[in-house]
Length: 316
Image 1 (cartoon, rainbow, N blue to C red):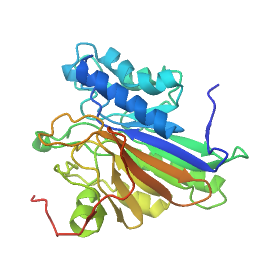
Image 2 (image 1 turned 90 degrees about the vertical axis):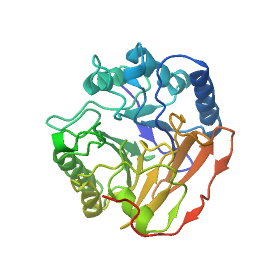
Image 3 (image 1 turned 120 degrees about the horizontal axis):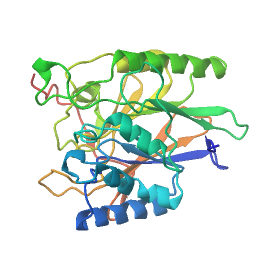
Image 4 (image 1 turned 90 degrees about the horizontal axis):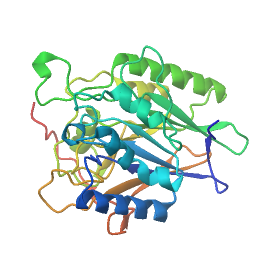
């Protein structure tokens, strides 16, 4: 039976977020990326590694299954627990579905993902509890499948999928259950998915943010209300996404910290942009978390540059 995740003896729980690794086939770039990922894990010594989508570039790979195994081999070989959600590039190959990818990750020894709940849209929807020293849940980590491309014909080209209502229902039911087990107090929680919510545009345009926006915020045009559900439940303190490789900013919206990761592969940016990872640290008993960037050259950035709101920048 797989051991539970738990806060360490110092009351901390550390996560390293890799995003948009887009493994395809072994070459010099991928060898360098794997070496960088290993250096980051050796330096940070996380309790969990999270891949927030586009783990592989499936439509470009001659062997997507091998590419996925290669992508997760770093924490797997180091004996570090890991889990993944999927992005739009993970299931573009005609012979590989998201369900097959989720089954594939579950077959790995150090993967802590869980089987999908019944009657919930997508593949890779699950929650992981982080236990305290008394083996009681002290935090929760939600993982959701944000899909790939719009299923609506008139929004198909150039627009991305969204978190569906069945997923939101699963989240709220799970949150209610964990809150009840915690004596009626919402359990400190985080959420991980690939495609940013529409609210990520709002925080950049109308709030003080920290970090860079060197890419379009490619959120879906359909807002199904997942952010509102998180506000109502009162448990999720922060969300972590990828998808837009040039963005690493974060901002607070109605008490929830919306964060981009730091792209682990510079797949399409034409300007210099150091790759790396985002690090997240929870402290047992606190409704807060710390986060910083760890870059490919070993630099850690704990204080990202401040960006003041400039009003609506997205033209629809």
